[in-house]
Length: 470
Image (tube, rainbow, N blue to C red):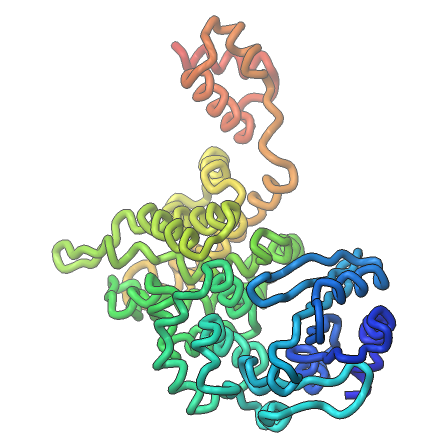
């Protein structure tokens, strides 16, 4: 652990705290150092006032300190350029051993004196880490903080650990407690799980620990909901297959976006909201896109339908986001993905699309045009039944249209809609009509005509508006 104690960030903190007496580096920083990972964040346990210690670190490092959690007596210091972060928590108990006994998992219950010295490892966390084992520190771990239930699945996924059988059994017994954690804390764990290299394993671990029904009951409700012959899986299995295909699409954008793959990749890497990139939100959207199917399932003449599951699903997504206290931006984004995930599929039989139909799609899907087009690709690739929409020819037709629509959507995102040939007030004066729905409808029609190349001047636009009015 010498390398951790002598790292530039630890040296800065030690200088700020007058040598670091009564201060320990603990938790994730020690774990990551033991794994050989680069450490840019430190978790500190301090004797005394964590706020005062955080203030000293902030002054020394010219960063910003703020209280992260009054409940857990934790402060955070962030570098001005975001290059490092230090969390400072007051020592829980009279000794560092007592503090570590209150932590979640043994691999995070290891501390190293900031001033240097041997690691303090009372529960054998370093040995568990070497054996790739995730084990609770005590049988009180989940009761003390129910969020640790989700964290177990997330850490096991991120660090490729096996959860110790006793910990699995304890998690199952305590599973209902997971809903007690604040919604935004639940969302943070789900976000990290979905963003992991193998989110499918993360979802499987949620199932194994009996947490899915507690935290995402809407996802659990998809089990056993049978579908039409176009699908070879029930809705739950199909949903996981869509997530799997979403990962494949991410990994091979050249196949699905052609020469625009680089632009699509940059878009997916953009921050969206709630610490999610657009790409992570798209994975989350894959899990939620068919969430309206259970409540809309019907059979007509022996054929299964899910009429209106896109619209009703968007409403259910709103409820999920409200429970998880997601931001309005993320909520609307996920709702739009659900609402529009069928739209491209309905257009395949019309290909090649006339420009007006392309414009209609771009206007309808708006800010999620690129994202939802990629989702439709993953959705179609996951339908491998015996129905007409699952034939190789139908799938390839969908993929071809998706490539074309992705290019149009990326152009729209870069350039925006056409600059109007005539302003609304100008058109109202020309036609002698007031502002209102009729004027709005005329302007929308003129934009579509301009996008399609049917008008290219102000006079053409005004003339077309006159013809439309009759």
